[in-house]
Image (cartoon, rainbow over all chains, first blue to last red):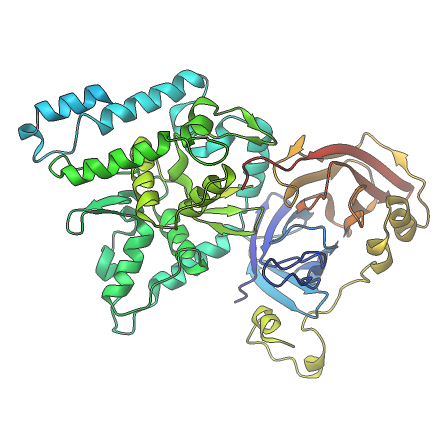
Length: 104
Length: 278
Length: 150
């Protein structure tokens, strides 16, 4: 179970609504650490992807200008209750995480 | 205040087994009446939402964030911390009982044994000390994670703050907190009431001032500004700094008495923490 | 990889050959050049080959008048244009204006919500790429600082 991704995925009629929240500092690389005065290195999600039953339904490309602890929600057609929705992200430092949930 | 002191001194014998009915309760009713008169279109319960009760553009942004708020991760962390046993095998429920939804609404309370106001944060650390565990820093992540979790678990429960009438020390602590609230301080010479009472709803440069009524119900808060949790005392500290005075320590007697007064003024409001703020 | 990153990796599933690579691979190319462009027109050129766009009233952007905090500005974007391929958020006055670019795959609705950072008061432009061109709408969002936000 991932601890950096939360997702709510619900089907209503033919439309699936997916809301996701990621725990990530989204550092821009231009912020100075308050204690050391040093620049904090850029560390941000670059790409967020969603697949439903292995079919890619969303690709979101982010810059450092997406807020810390990013939120992303969208809708797609054809999702059904019980489908496996997978959320995955990669960041510019090589970090990544993924999480699966069942559509409700 | 004068009238309440006179009333309180006339009927001490009758108040031994009851909470104070004059003094704090009279103050609270006047406090509520002041804000209801200042913002007549706001339903009473809405004051628990702070500035979002008053400012619709800000409220829309807040509602968007609350749809999936970042503090959800913090609540999970808090739950994990709460369930962790101490080295001696005991848990927080051995100190607080297992009615989890009724823990947060009782705080702050007056501890008759040590004669001081005890806040939820202090109670958590007291529990740790009693079980030979090291205490959490009041500006650390653990304490706000646990209080966020406890707040979340007691959402909808009404604040139940008591100023026992049979202990004059409790009334003193309340009165001291009240005095703090109305005392001007700092280079800018503002009291809490100057901004959050008389000028509530007005702007202080780019910030709109929230009402004192409802302040303690929704802490700790996740601040967009820091991307982290902020406790009520951390906010007190920020406010004192903002009027260019030297802030008191987190969980100092001054801030605990202030919280006691403030919480009593919002007595009966439903807990709605943790919350998102800017 | 350092411990911080390892905390983000999901445990359980064994991936043998990919041990040296990030566990999750990019599904599509990340438009690095467009994200690095210091001005909106450069971002548009890098994304679409041209900065010529057509204003459209078929794009809706729900955004605040005055951002409570420039670090977290909630946006809700929707369009009724057809055959949408991508939707991009461009914050004109940000040091790197392109904030996000979203691929609308077949079967996915041309709408989404997110929260962005804005450095200062700026127009926020939404650029929708369809099979017939690039359409835009823009709204000014004010960002203020100073007061007792602490």
